[in-house]
Image (cartoon, helix red, strand yellow):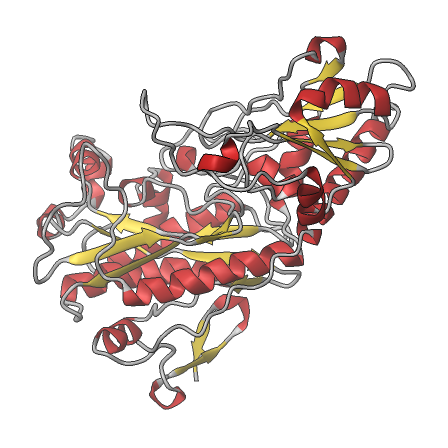
Length: 463
């Protein structure tokens, strides 16, 4: 593959100013709806540096995501505030000791942070209480809107800001989190440009890299030697100025698909393409998940791995045996971006559907992954074999041939447009494309070797 020609795009701090503007507008609407005045301040606490257990080894710092979204600050130890009435923004920087300059480098003046992050005012963290009272306490104690709410992917709760003297202020823990989370769901053009760049870099990396696997962990590391006839599944994505990508490619390590690999790969590819062709604003994500399940079950029935009526299989939730995870997730500053289950939307309980990270209707401006998969997992197959009703749909003689297969997943990142969606990911997907690239062909493939032309909704179509 030729050296990359990708150049990082500029990161305008206007991106974060725009995020703050959208938050203020949304908060004003929320307050107006409950007949409350447009007064108070949003206050967020940024991330802190952490050491490795009891040592003095500093772990690589990554800013807290909501703080990143609103301020774009790379350094630890900051606080940020936004006045709802005026929209003015304030950063509070840590006051570093003088010996910091000896060991860590220059101590930046407050003016540096004001100019770099394009905020209206900058003070030190130890001045928070005094500044908020002096600048915004004309009508008594300022009201602080703090970030507290549940992340529906992790089950963890965000940490509300805390500082010395906070008990002197009125606080609200209920309004900010749902409003700010919903702001993050819809991406601006500037955010999309960064996600697109992360996708471009990741797409190139997937093409170059054939040895990075996903889901290795301390108890089960990715330490098995890949042998001729194995499939490799790579799930990885780059991050640029906080904004990320998430791409999965599956391919045979010897460069040629065998019959069983063709069967399963094409089943997943059909599910992937069917979903993308149906995506548009107003489409329900659970319906897209079921569409992917149906495509996989139909393919397996066609190959006589399953037998019987696919509608009956769907009713028995057999799609969850082969695809136990959800179809995809919102993507942005976090790989699993928040907002999948806003207030009032409950997670389904059925097998497979309970793993969905969202069941929302798609909206223009969302970025969401499409990642169907088909896996032969012993624990799930054993479970269904013991079910006297569901087991009848399985041709167990054929299933046995795939028991050591593992699985296939194909994942692309999609931006929902007014009419459909746009695929931000650019990796070989068709079997003939993958085999050509693994044989040394450049990507994208020359037009003369391609049998496809671009189409709407992020796919290709036969020419």
